[in-house]
Length: 254
Image (tube, one colour):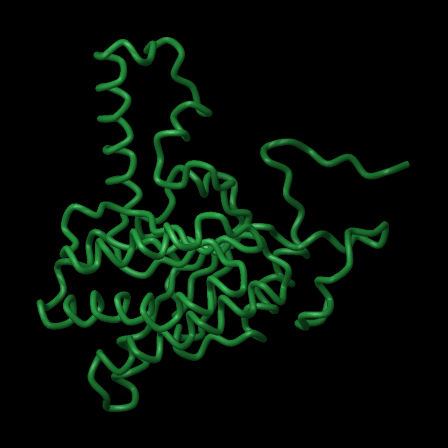
């Protein structure tokens, strides 16, 4: 398959071409290195990273995806210098302010996942506004993982389950994979089919630990600010060329 958007308009066929994924999650990595290679401050790399995120959202819709999850700020990112953390917080605020009208008009539903307790009041209000004003949209779902960590998410889910069991709202013996998923930040959104990580690093970095159990992974050498629609399409092509068995065995026809 060629790395073109048009190649994903066709359903699976007997030739082996497969349907594109419905849900792609991306670890957007490499902003700092992109800036360093150009002698620029890290903040410049983060600003260019926002532009890459905008391209990814547009490309995801062109590629006929239904869900896109972007990992924009992890629970571990608080360890970065205070000035850089402020810049990252400011970029999410500006993204919501600048892009919300367009996202609303284009039928995009915005969902922000992660722990909001440490966010300032202005950012909390903007997140609530983005989710409220797009809650009825259903053409495309954009999840932004902000102050998110997979382990933190599981801990918060475990606490919520424990409280419900103690209050009699839940029976411990009734807890299974499906009911546990209902307590996660991603409740209502299917697990990702494909996880992409840029910058050449090959690790999951505490991202969607539960949800990515059977996802395919594509690791790209490109730094996130250089991520384009063509890069996205090439990753989709690689996914479509794989044989997903979910622990089983595919039997050849005939």
